[in-house]
Structure formats: C-alpha cells, structure tokens
Length: 264
Length: 375
Image (cartoon, rainbow over all chains, first blue to last red):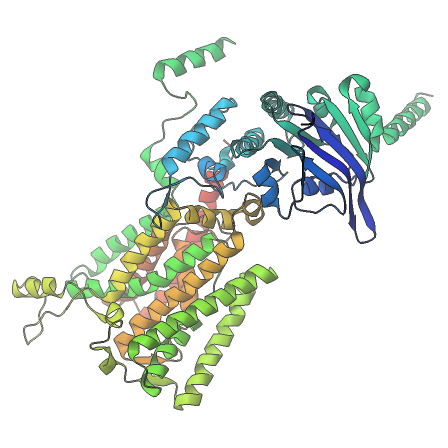
C-alpha cells in the first residue's frame, strides 16, 4: 500500500474551449491537511467538483486506497469516503439541528413498510457529536437558523465525518466568518486531521491556511504551481505565488509613491 | 475569567446547560407553525358562540354542516400544504376536481362501467396528471406556478370539451342509483356512526324530523377522510424519513440534493398527492350530489392554498404543518357556514377570507424571523 490515502494525478477538465484545469496533481496522506490556494477563477471550484464527483475529469486519474476510481455521481464519492462540505453547507435554516444532521440519511426504526424516523436516537447522536467539538447544542430541536456561522460550519463538517468521510474536502470554510469563529472552525479541522482524516482545505486566505496546513498547493489560472511542504515555504512566498501576490506588491509600491507625493 | 469559571460551576450544579434558558410553554407553542391557525379557530368559535350560539349553528345538524364544508376543503388543503412545504404550488387542484368528477361519471353512465372501475380509473388519471405536473416542474426547472397554471386551463378545458362531446351537456347526472352495493363507492358515500345518531335521536338529545328519524343521520364521509388524512399527513411529516425529505426539499433544494435527498422524486410524489386528494374530494362530492359538473371545484385551488397559508405554511417552502392546514380549513368552513346564522350579509365572506389570509402571512413572516434569527 502506498503512503498516500488519495491521489489525484494529472487531472484536467475542459469546458468546450476553456481549459478549467490542466495537469493538476495532488497527493494526500492520512492525517494531512493540504491547503488548496488560489485567487478567484484559479479553478478551485472546478477542482472541488471533480473531487466530489460532480464533474468527471477529462484527463488524469483518481486513486483512492491504491485503487483507481471513477465517479459517476456525487453519491459515489460520498460512498467511498470523500465528504465534501460546500460553501452553502447544505443546511436548511428552518429545520432543526437534528433534522439537518441526518438529512438524507435518517436513522429508522419499526416494522418494514411502517418505518419511522428515529428522532430520539438522532437527537442523542447529534447532540453528542456537536458536544465532542465543543458546541453545546442547547436543544437539538432548535432551528439551525439560530446558530452562528462557525457553529453551522462545524455542524456540516461533523456531519460529513459522522457519515464516514475519510477525505474531507472543505470549500472556503472560513471565508464568511469573523476571526473568533474562523479560529473555532480551524481548530476543529486540525482535530479532525489528528484523528486520521485527510483534509483538503480550499481557501484564498493564506492567513487561515498557513497555521493549519501541512502542505500547500497553489492553483493559478487552472494550473498547479506546485505543492510545497510547510517547512519549504513562507507565508509571504505563498501569498505572492497566488495571482494576487504580484499585484499586492505593485499596490504597495504605488501606495508608497502616493505617500511620498503627498508628503512633499 | 472568574465569570467563566462561575458559569461552569453553575452548570455543574444545576446539571443542565447554563445557556439553556427556561422556555415557557407559550414560547414552545410560538415555534409551532400551527399556532396562528389554532388562535384563529378559537377566536372564530368564540365569535360564533356569542353571535350565533342560540341559532342552531352548534346543534348536531348545524355542526355537521360546517364540519362537512371544512372537511371537504381540508382534504385538499392538507395535500396543498404538504406540497407547499415541499416548496411547490399546485394551481390545478380545482380543475383536477372537475376532471376527476367526469372521469367517474362518464364511464359509469355512458360506457356502462361498474362504478368502482370508474372510480379507480379517476384515481389512475389523477396519478398520471400529478406525475406529469411533477416531472414537468422537476425536469424543466420552471416555477410550479406556471406549469400548474397551464394545467388549470388545460384540465378545465378538456373537462368541458370531453363532456360536451360525449354527453352534449355540461352535467352528468344519474350516479346515485349506482352507489348501492358498489364495492368501493361506499368509501366516499357512507355516513358513519348512524347508530349513534339514531340513539341520540331516540333519547331526544338531537333534533328529529317529523317522521322521527334524526335530522343529522351520521358523520359524513368527508369528515372521516379529513381526520384520517390529517393524522396520516402529520405522521408522515413529523415521524418519517420521507417527511424530513419534504422539509429538506422545500427548505433548500440544492443543499438537500447535495446530501443525497432525492428531491425530484419527493416533489413528484407530492404533486401526485394533490391530484389524488382532489380526486378524493371529487368522489365525495360527485357521489353525494349524484352528478358530475364540469365546473365543480372552480377556485378550490386558491381556497386550499389560503387554508394552508393560514395554517402556517410559508410560501417559500420548508415550513408548515398538516394540522395547521386542517385548522385553516376549519376556520374557512366554519365562517362560510356560520355567516348564514348571523345577520351579516354572506357577500362579506370573501372579504373575511382575504383579510384572514393577509393577517396570517404577516404573522407567519414574523414567526419565521423569530425561528431563524441568530441568538
């Protein structure tokens, strides 16, 4: 068995004439957090959807636990253990925590043909799981709409793990959150990885990615600029590798220029 | 820091989460979608109790009368509510009622089918039409408002055209004689608990006709269907996996799909549900009247939606209850009958209907904000 849990080798995806992804390669070990960085339009979303089974890659292969895998639907990806948490979280704010946690995979009890949704069991599991990540669900029948953004993110991640994710793909989990909430989510991600999950963390925020990531893959205009171990690269270098980097440098120079003129 | 340790201490002491405020029962009730309808129906009964308490409205006969009207509306309102919770509308309910009516009457009267086969035929057509509505909405992604509005016209037109083509008229009478000894028709045409009413009559507890039989002969079939459907729909929504899928499909279609809820199938089944409920409504009314009318059920779709909305269903989906819709139907049924017992001109009924619905929507909107607001 190779040391990698999952490998994405030379993935390419074309939409008509547009090359959305070209020869992107990523390899993940158990317990590793890989951060996928890139500016808007770099191809992050396309890559996630390819990992999640929404798109089929036009070139390249996905190898999971040493076996070549072809996904026909998002369900297939879920079934082998690639759990994707999309930016919209797939939570319904009018429904309760429990009903959201088990949405689509409700535990049942009772006679065949007269099966009922085992709400007591579901409530217990949901409260227990949320408790494990330090979120006291005051009442598992409360609507998800009453939770904070960070809590919702954690609920979605916790749900993916409960339903057997071995590889967790997180799409911008911290983008809409404040500092405190973001650190809560990041802490949880580190904890999940320490329990043996492989995590792909997609973000454009280097400051969130750098402290938690073990390795970093930078996407730019559909191509991978390479994968770097943390010890080999600095935060500043990462930032400048993303498309924004050069522009930020330029901006800095321009601002200094303006400053100089004003001071004169 | 000290505050924090204190609160942890208090949590240990009291044995429960310190952030869990004691919720009053009133507050729990406020979080239920049917609250508005419950309050509304209590108000309606108090009002008529005062205004029409001594007029016979609440006699056995009067009560069954307004319950019958409520129950008929309730049968379609519950199905409409389930569909609304699932995030869609069905404007073809009223036309489906008319269409189902002639599906029962024409084969039975003109083609010589046994009544029960034409009833089954009507239900089969309902499943087909519901399925068509559903598949159109799911596959095209068009708003159900448009798809079912088209179906409203198509079905009503077809009902009229087919009936006139085959019978040369717009009404098909003569069904009453076929009901007796039919193996299925009794399901929609039998007054139950007749022994109870006979007994009450013999005890002189309820009003009698001049021949000594009680004025109210039994519980009409609509009421039995109404109660059964309310219980069934509530069980589905609250206690089954499919119920959770209905809420999820209406609450967030994309999210539900992403976690593996078969949203398309759920919605199609709910469209079949409204069409089947319309057919139950049609069976009861056609067998009761003994004739099918091409205009039967006109505007019923809007009354059903109004009852569902008064019952707490959000127009945007994902929230509501079957009991709420049932209460909404009871409010409308009671007022539409009760108004005869008062001095108020019955022309005002529609004004009431509109006002009630508007108040309900404002109230529901407020409730939704309460439910989803971040603490």
